[in-house]
Image (cartoon, rainbow, N blue to C red; front, side, top):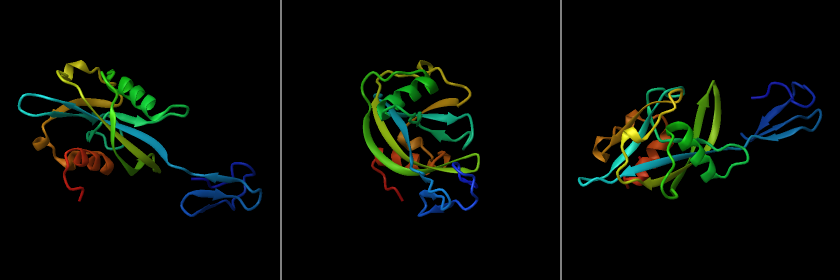
Length: 176
């Protein structure tokens, strides 16, 4: 990530233990911690069973793959605030009740050849009567929305392994 020390420009900066940059010349230390990210599994109860709401990614990484609404938590935000902001930005939707945390997994989010280690926190919420037309998609990020019954889900269509784990956890399916 760093080729030169950000403080003194030394080329001797080293990345140690997979998490800390240290410069022996000036003493600079930078801990490269994880980024917090959220995802929201929206369920829609129907007489013949529930449907799960998925977004089709409209940008890299994993353009065209399924994902859940959500994203990175910004500096100065709590996790719930970040989730609400992402729901508003991506699909212009405000949950009718507070989403419930049901799973968390580590993930590696590769963006422009840089691996960002994340802690993905997954929330669920039920929204009776919700329809695809209720969403206004941020076209730069989301190309479509899909409402799927559990038996219609193809786990090979997902953008990220942690999202697969989250959906399988919600559906009480084996993670392997």
